[in-house]
Length: 633
Image (cartoon, rainbow, N blue to C red; front, side, top):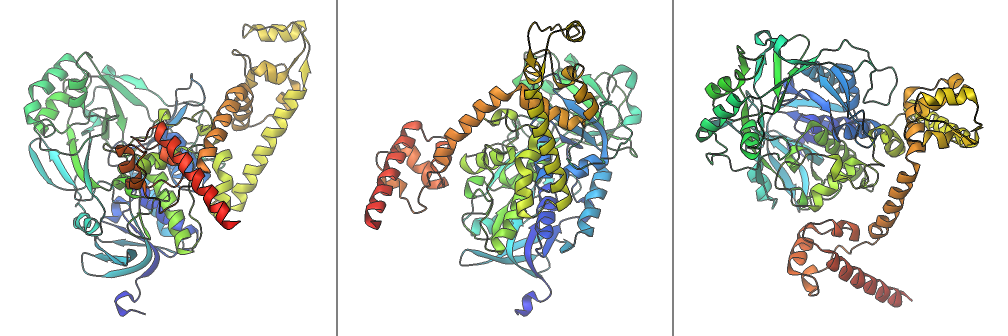
């Protein structure tokens, strides 16, 4: 054994202790690997440097998928929520979204304890400054003190720390987050290894003292009375909920911002990185949406044992004196005190077109990237990538085929496919509109979609698998019963149906009644004594309702998936010379050569590759297949 590595040998090393790093290290350790998780500051494991919340549109789907695969984020969010709220409740199931306002400190404490109690997992506070490679393979890492750690795989989950630089007004200083050191050195190491590194920008609002807010002048936003949870596991904790509040910007707010734009590092040209389109700073909102007189601002607690309060929607990089003027122009915040100022942070990232769908880099075998280093924003996007990277790192070590989630079975698959096939030049945020199969990829059925895979991989335990199978069996049996059970019109039934502006004049199956716009499983149960006696859980009733009511739409999307799968099955040889295919457009040749898609379906999703080029590729691949078949015969 090399004495340089004695006592420091691991199967997987995870660099960074954010949400991606936590999921990656837990997944790898639970699969039996010896794992080292390094962090710049172990006190801030799984911290929420921006909004202390989990979930929301599309993001709740990711959290449920993490849980279905055997990850931890859903359990952590359920254990530490301050408030639970189902968004878009009045809309269809494809866009309903669970959101938890989290207790920031409790979340960190929960995740730190989970990591420390995990067998095979070791924590280390240090800064990784170099990679050890040979023949384009990872061998380990080196920390700032010169210690070497050997590993067959390394996962980089550096968040916004990679060469991070904070901006407050025209002042700037190195930091990944306010009060934390940046990770310096790794960017140049990655470039040395042939990996392109670029810059992005993000930001966060000020934190204020809740005792200086006049809550009589803002609108209360309570949590739900009927609770939903992220994890599919039973016995989630019932906690006392804390309300959030709503205020709005005023004409005075906008005037203060416009008058001080010359003091903004963003508008002054000091920040080169592109910021998130779907979470812009307040000055960006005021400039871009000049026709709007006001913008919603949410007041959200950071924890039950702190007065620190988050001002959602008020991200800015303007100077502190301007921030105070802006905040005090908001109704209810006229006398507010700033605990921590808002700031912008510019950081290095690795454009993910340099990764395979497994999240391993194309340049270095065994080196994976997950989270904001790949150009994403959001805790949920990071955690989902971390889970997949952790699974695949272990499978790489064990010489097994690495898993690839598809666009048709998960939002996680859609997220990763978008990252590795498209040139992302701004922080990527998961949206329901990014999925062409969003009716199939609902938050309520994430377990049905991914638990079997989680069980096969080894992350879903036997008791969870047994509960899942029982749930699916009950749902299937109940749908069959509703399809077979018919009711005849009578006065009693029509009196009940009249409550929903419905009536029947002939025999109908109960499932046909559920399909009516004004009815659902709950309503039909009032005329179905068997359903009343069965007394199913809300989750089962919801699944039965959705599967019956949207059966036609679901079938149509499944047909689309089957059609797309034909292109997914057409593999592209790894050594294909795109530049030699002169029938393709110049842009397509360049894009295909850079990204090197594995299947024709992936090629079709690359920006700049048009349908005509896909047709040409299909003809060429079919021709090569026939030539090979003739040679083999």
